[in-house]
Length: 270
Length: 114
Image (cartoon, rainbow over all chains, first blue to last red; front, side):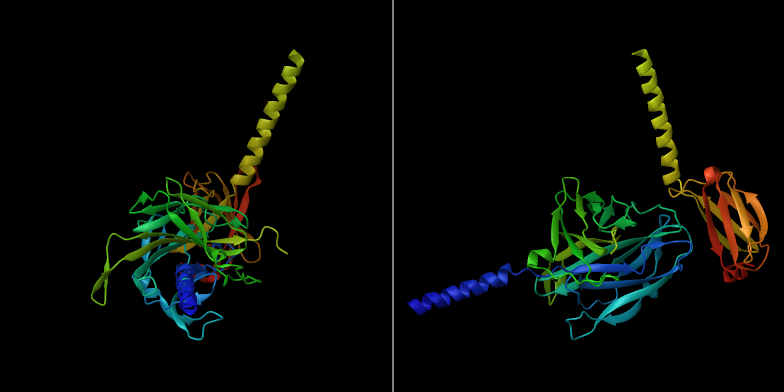
């Protein structure tokens, strides 16, 4: 009797641990080599397109995206064919994963919003496909125009804070749209990119909830988060698509994410 | 009492002028962008929000800092001229109230736009 109870207890505990242990947050990522191109800078920037766990520095396999391009002066430029296949891995990973990279030459002043729609990623652990529509904005040559315009993705974050020239401690505010309409009370996941260039001290989370910060939007789909450390911060608002995709002959749900990346610089550099 | 009101009014005006002055100095950084095409160099001068710099002075220097030519931006902030020299050019926008900025147009780009 005694052993039966303890076996049961252990089983229940095991189930609890499995259920409670959070699945690390996946993030689509488009990370440029700089967020502000000045008159003195090189006009060619490099961008890396990845599917990662940003804080834990895990890469996931990323097949060629469905869409990749840039919006400048309200015009969309398709850059999908210019993406180059690359490989990389996190410090704890013993296998390399595919990601994508591109060199892009800035030719004119203004804001450049780079975007990608990845190919649906099958996640067996969650029994869903994942599609993260991801954006990042690069400002060029002193003309601050275009960053607040939607580009018409199925779901996207519209920055309400100018998304470049940000200090540590700044509040980043954005609005989550699904098919052009705000999502009331959208849940937004926030993560720090531990691989950020210049990050001298890798962030080690003291407990799981520190890995991914969670904020909820208000009734108008507007959320805010204050960024405590210099580097790249990813914001990801997740919804369930109205459409499904087939996996092994079965219709499966699709998690669609609106992801936006911003860079902060330390206002008190040591 | 009347005197005090008068002083306060003056102070308000002074504060207002101060605010106006500092506001424009901070928010009105000027920029110039230039490119070469078809034998000419085109310049565009603008404020960060996209508003054109009208009537701004444009000064064009070569790599030895010799002034090659100068001109004035039009209503759209534009000023263009024939390529004066295939060289690294430093193009300066000098707007009112001492707002200045410059753009380096590299020799290779001037060459490509001949």
